[in-house]
Amino acid sequence: MDNSKNPNESLSAAHTSGLAIASIVLSCLSVLVGPFGFLPGIICGHLARSECRRNPALTGSGIALAGLIVGYIFVGVTALTLLMVAVLVMLGGTSSAPYVYTLF
Image (cartoon, rainbow, N blue to C red; front, side, top):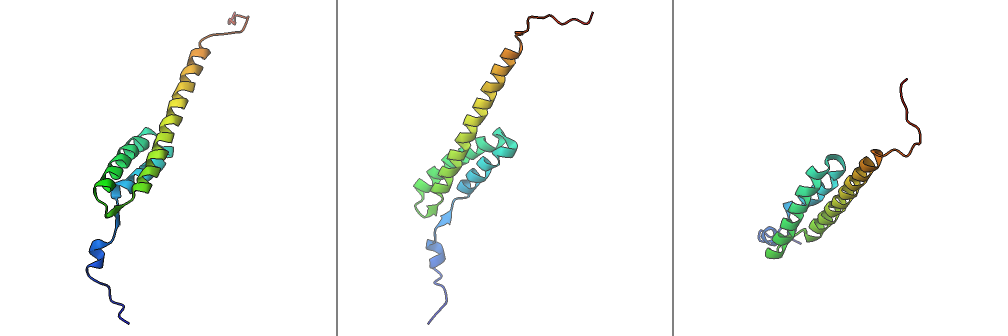
């Protein structure tokens, strides 16, 4: 039995898109770096899915999709956080206390 590899086998083997890997890594790093993670993660995810459609020998479309999903979730979380902060700032300016506090 011959255990040697066919030299043509490595040429036809599927490779994972580097952009897809970058997409999921950057999107997950959004926990630490915020928009500096999910914005490039979303961009890399869209580029990776396009790259995988154009080159059938390239894998990683699912990884890119996961990166996109995580990235867009962080977009939503960031938007809700900013909205909550804005509402709290607006409500913080009004006082419902009936007393006026003075130093003297």
